[in-house]
Length: 227
Image (cartoon, rainbow, N blue to C red; front, side, top):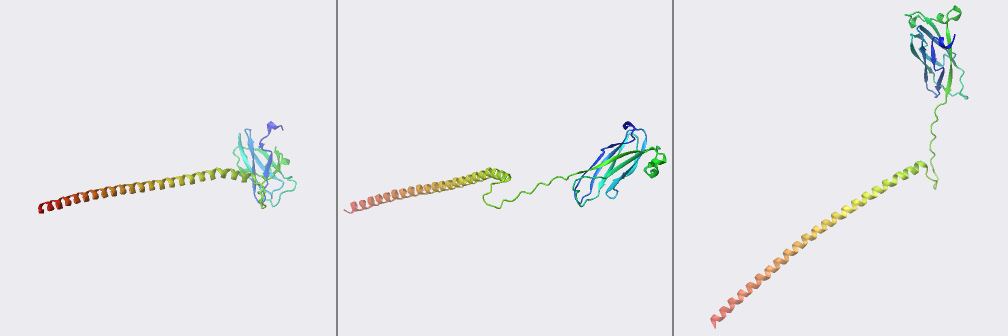
């Protein structure tokens, strides 16, 4: 039977698992029915204790597709060569319209029984887990050159120090300005008081002079009358 006559096309044909210890890993493949027939399928594996397949059987309607999820059980250790010999087998057969997954039985996929069963094998491929970034060693010795991250921190901190110094300088200038303004106001008040004090002393001298002149005139008149 040629490729164009396949009941179900499978994508992909390689099941790739990115291995991580002590963790379940899942992947999936699609069953694509490009025919006008109802097609039943069943998925088998050489290592059923290691994998869970959902669904492991079913019916793909005409001109439709179905997803199958394969989950690998948690592994305690990685294989040394990252090679896997596990295989999957997808069997498919035409069924009557109106058939349901409950109607599927093992005898439908029995070739010796005269059934026209198609089979397709899938390989399992292990993918190495992503490498974790190595921790940056701490420099304990003095005089070691700064790392790239330290250089970045130094370059980033210099503008920040300049801004802090500029702010402190502005605050000091503002404080000095306020102090000068206060001193100027105090000097203006003292000068005003000094001016008022001089005016009062000058007024007192003038009054005393007038009183003395008047008193001298009275005494002079008194003397003239008595002579």
